[in-house]
Every structure is written in structure tokens, then in C-alpha cells.
Amino acid sequence: MGEFFQALFQHTFLQHALLAGLLVSISCGIVGTYVVTRRITYLAGGIAHCVLGGMGFARYMQVVHDWNWLTPMLGAMFAALLAAFIIGWVNIKAKERIDTVISAFWGLGMAIGILFIAKTPGYGEDLMAYLFGNILLVTQGELLAICGLDLFIAATALLFHKQFVAVCFDEEFARLRGINTQFFYFLMLALTALTVVLMVSIVGIVMVIVMLTLPAAIAGRFCLRMGSMMALAAGLCAALTFGGLAISYSPNLPAGATIIVLSGTAYLISLLFKPR
Image (cartoon, rainbow, N blue to C red; front, side, top):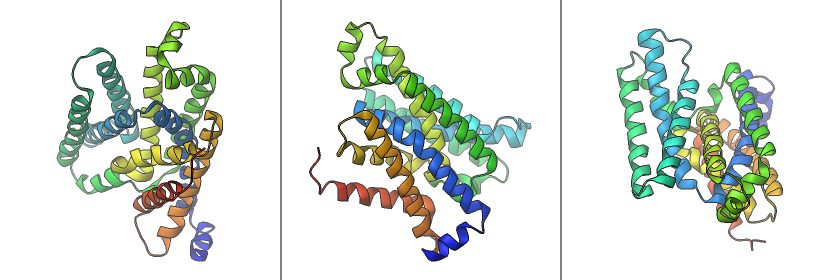
């Protein structure tokens, strides 16, 4: 642990990694609380696995067709928002089983991403970074993008917090009170999609849903109000990210996987305590 603190003051990449973890924790605490309370973890999982398709397409167009403006993060954002809209629409309007539809999107998004990455010259080796993340490779530009998305998510959640709470706890009553529940449901899914994009660079696509939900699930066992649940979830997410970085540094373990193991352990420990 002491070696990590010493390296933290010497290496910029560690400082960027820690700052990225702290910034992502804000959105993770806010949106994770909505996801856990509304019980849409399965929807968030479907959105998360569609991200690879957008990232693979963006990188393919960058390398093969010189679309330098289309970064992998931008491609991930487009794919996540599109998936959120389609999955949300199917969940509300269509008669198909939603679990089957989500499974189709889950596999389709991953497969499209793998195909584009395979056809991108000299880029196949970065597939592992997409799937499992690499917080140590976060750049200054990505930090600015994370900060901008953080501000948007936090501002939207603050502005429409009462409507989101109503949709989470009693959608029918909210509809009777004149709240456009479908609009705020789709907006909630959009915020979830943006948070998934933020988390991809930290823990990767495969494990993003764990980090999005477990800190909020732990916080939900000890909080009675959504505001305090969000604050505790954000704090837990930051602490788990920092702890994962510190533990993984000396033995040279994958940081993302270490963060997830630490989060899962913390959740299992929280089950030993009686919830409020």
C-alpha cells in the first residue's frame, strides 16, 4: 500500500486513474440508485453490452476511412443511447418477452463490435481493454469527457429528481398526477446509458453492470432516503475504486477486476448486517 501512495505522487497515469474513478463515482452513485430502485438492472446490462458495437464501429471508421472525429467513446455513446431507446420502447410497447429481446441485443451488440474490431487493421489486441477496461490508460481528453458527462448527468438528476423518484416508486400514481412517465422513463434509461459509457473505461463492458449496481445496492440497505442513498453509493464507488487501484498496484493485478472483486466482497459483507 505504501508503494502505491509513493507512486501516486510520481506517475501521472495513476493520478489520472484515481481522478477518473472519483469522477465516475458521482454518476455511478446517482444513476445506480435509480437503476437499483427501479429494478432495471437487466435493462442496464443489455445497454452495456451494446456499447462494444459502437466502439468497434467507431474505431473501424477511424482507421479504415479516416473518420478521426468519431472516437470510440463517441461511438459508445451513440450505441448506448440507441440501445436504451430501442430496449425501452420494446419494454413499453411491444408484446415480445423483454428478457428475450434484451438477450438478442446483448449478443448482437457484442458480436458486431467483435466483427468490426477483427476487421480493423492492427487493432484486435485492444479487445481485452474494451471488455475488461484499463483505468490506468485513461487520458486527459477522456477525463474532460467524463467530467462533461458527469455535469450533465448530475444537473439532469437534480432538475428532475422528484419525477424520477415518482417513476421509480409508483409509476401509476405519477401518471395520475400528470407526470409524463414514459418521457422520464426514457430519460432515466438515457442517463443509464451515459453512465455505462463512463464506466467502460474503468472496469470494461463485461463488469460495468456490477459497478453500476453494487455500491447502490449496499447503500440501499442502510439509507431511507434516495438523496442519502446516492451520496453513500457515490462514496462507496469512490472508495472501492481507490481500494482496487491500491491493492492491484504492487502485485500488478488487473485494476478493473480487482475493483469488481472488492465490490462483490463489500456487498457480501453488507448482507451480514440487518437492513434499515
